[in-house]
Image (cartoon, rainbow, N blue to C red; front, side, top):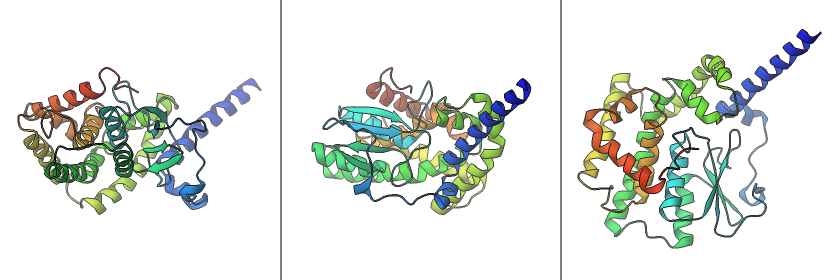
Length: 291
């Protein structure tokens, strides 16, 4: 009888872990049978006793080297630190914002989704100066769009195709035992890869692995050429564009999945770019970049 009870508990444990994975990595399955998202005005805030002008940042978990595995979550947190805006982290494994993604924030009683919109709202509210002039602001916007769309999707090709268990462990934030992630990764990884590659093909295009490598190298070369001999992309001061580029490069470099973008960033060719990532990290996060 004890053996039967133990087997039942073990089966429940594994089933629960697998369901958690499925709900997290295959959200469209749950959306089909779940409720439709509520309009923004009817969303219930998690932070009931919120403080005025404090940002409650809901983001994916991270690792011992990374505050979050999501480049967009890192981007928003970097921006908050850059402008010394009071904020508190809130880690989500299954939960999502109204747009079905992370990060989102709760700010002065309002639910705000998408990193672009979050930053725009904060710039407006706090009357922040992101760049020293209009020309830099236009270039900065273009760089941010390149990082958030093109570079992000190129990196996704590698993140969901190489050492996926490292990514999944970071996403779970220790809520699921590593051994369970290792066991379920062969089942979950193909589903995640297929879903994310559809997005990649729609946004960037369908290419051979060698062509993806070529495009990835080109993006990193562009960032390094833009950097030139400056401390940051636009000189001695960190800007919003730096926050975005740093988010994507650091999420690849410090997750360390042993794939092409990581190999490039650690290569002799991109030493200046790697040093730039470290410079932004140390300037904004100091020794507190871990989860």
